[in-house]
Length: 188
Image 1 (cartoon, helix red, strand yellow):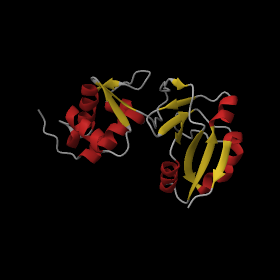
Image 2 (cartoon, rainbow, N blue to C red):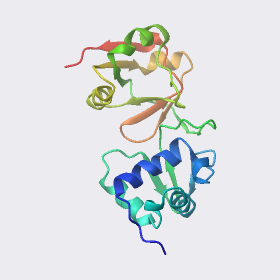
Image 3 (cartoon, rainbow, N blue to C red):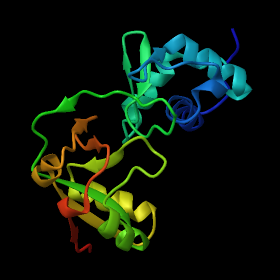
Image 4 (cartoon, rainbow, N blue to C red):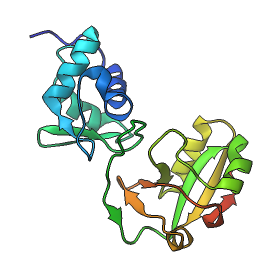
């Protein structure tokens, strides 16, 4: 067996890329919910990146245990990305009936006018990413520049037929959010 010579950060980034953006480049196929066999994923990653050949399922568990972001999950012998997909085939999630009344979306100030006009759109991803935590939304916004935070009134969005999906305790998804459901909140 080939010995793993990469590091866990590189492995985590590569797993995210394979599961979220380009599974075909690793010779893997995701099912309709985004799941793939762990061994298939690791073999595909090893073929594409020799420094990651020999990575193990235990190392995937180590990444999950030490990462502040839960971008992927393992169920039995399968693994999937929870959110952030940009692949053409839409990943299916079960909608939730009762999202929190308020959710949050952080972005850069340069996006303000467009969002106030058009609402929140996925822009190259499959879903709009929302947070149940205002501070987390602001942190996400900081990654993109001068941050702003939009507050989403889910009852207004739902009255427009918007469905919400929950990925974990802090990440929610929606196909889009109409501008009428948004309020711009001041940031620190």
